[in-house]
Image (cartoon, rainbow, N blue to C red; front, side, top):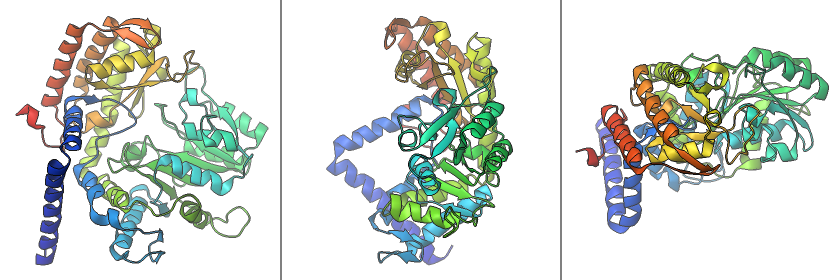
Length: 457
């Protein structure tokens, strides 16, 4: 490392230290809340499937002076001055995204996977056009055609579902595609624990001359690690976020493989150029360059040896978690998992998803309520809970630890006295006992990339 690089590193270190000290002195109330959140995460088991525990080197990128730069446009074609290093950061993120996923094109400016999905939809669809996506109750996402989302309001959305064994009904999906002839098919899920056959989806899309969008938000890390098949060269468009399983900052990516230079609808440009124009200026203005720096860091980390071990743990832990629930007599949707997601039917045990979620959070276990196939409860209540192992893998937990975790979850759920669908009673002594046990697990299996909180000293 050169002297100049050392001095730069020193400048950044002093900047971060001075920033924390300034926050402590000038806004102690906010500083206290942030400290409390750090300790909450350290002392809780994050078993929610929709997030991970970002690497500190990715988090710190979000707190850099890059936030001060307005940079509408793209590298080499900005509408503002002062973007020399901003261009370097964005180009780095683009190249790392392409390298991680084997893509031919990457746009790293999307603020979220939701906005990335919307960009794709409004690139190839007109209002009123048909799209085909997985039903929300079957494990799909709001942006895949739900009436609660713009995707189900602006477009004519048709939903495909699951078979009797609760796996994607590929034959049913094809029958709906042939009947309705949608212009866009969406594959990918938010609460589906099995592998997805991208090639089969592409065959149907080609059969009806439709575009295919693969949303890999929940499995992006497993795709990078080679533990789930990649859709990059099967789908016309692949979208993901960077905080669920890539352990980076919050934001979205739009990726393309072999179809990147395919002619767009109307024949005026390529699909990749159309995506660029839809991100900016159609949907977004100046991008968050600190978030893009954080994406770049996360995309580098998931291509290293350390992440390969994390990814292996994600899968082994989820399989052990699902088995531990089944050993306790719970119904696990699809009877297991191939990724990090485990969905459990708790209504069969007489408990709603929302009450299970709240009671477990009271004890330091974070899961989320989730609808299950053919759910009889509304979305704010649900019949199930969804768990994930991204946050457990970064603690270097082992499959045997999942038995202890499920034992504690079971202890809470069987002791919970449900008074209504959205209210319950839990014995304070039991709550305190489980909380102590969770805290002990967290001290034994700390977040491997974070310093232990001062409360442990």
